[in-house]
Length: 197
Image 1 (cartoon, rainbow, N blue to C red):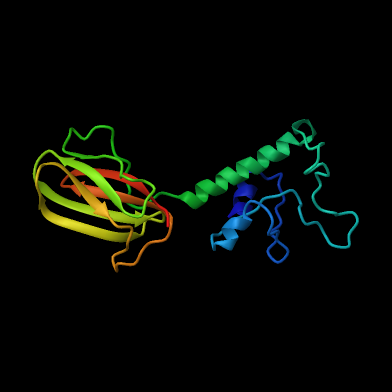
Image 2: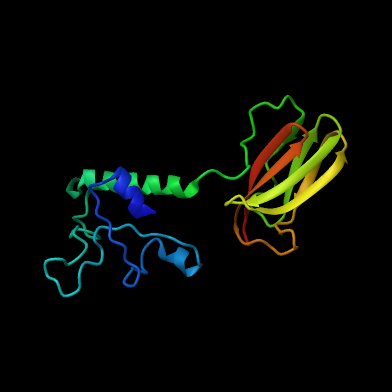
């Protein structure tokens, strides 16, 4: 994705993808060790073995006292930043059916932030202005539905809902960011929960 986005927003860059000789000693490495996909974008970090004209890491000042902003190619680094932001935007995409809560729902359904958060079990304080059906759904960051609870009728007033950080089969979900959506008739509310194991 980075290569295609770089071609679109930063044609000056000529990215080369390295996998076999990729570095395992930079910011992305801790993500790799835990099984998360990650990308290291670096200035010709590896170079070509045996080719003295391509030693790699063409910023020879890297990791030295000479590594200062005035020695960097600002346009080059701006191009990398454009490609990185375009890649993030392309990978993020819209979250499926997770509307942001509007600023005013005239008090029909109000959901406070989950407590505690981050946590392993979450309590979501809510207030219903009048008795109504209620759907409570939890999805992962990709928008996949993990857990759902529905009531034909919930009474009006302040109350709370609980999510034990489990999926529909009762399995604990891994650490990460999850989203809840509440629906009471024509009224919705949504929020975010961070699971830490």
